[in-house]
Image (cartoon, rainbow, N blue to C red):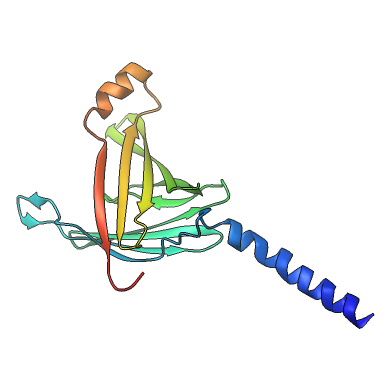
Length: 172
């Protein structure tokens, strides 16, 4: 009887821990850490420093971006539900994240108001990829505008696809 109870306890512990393990990428990648942008782009006021602090757990990925002294934080659930997002410009929106075998996908939607009576949704899809040594984070971003026909959305998005590289601060 004691052996059966021990087996049940071990099995329960494994079942309880299983969701946490499956929430990480198939290769066990965890994106948690502090990163600094590689050679930030120059702006009219000098260089725009950018750092990223990421907390990745079984439930969500929390992203804190500090860019040109302005700090924004977003919490994107990994279960398909929506979390709270704040754009680098400070516009609130919604986000969600998902992991696959090679990368992390973070999607966000914000509503902009180019005119007082017009609302425009801006959808951003980021593909995060961490190098094998865990030192370089590459984020590829694509933007589209779902409220417009595809041809207009593509024309508006134009050159909004970007790639940014970050270097992990400290040990991975």
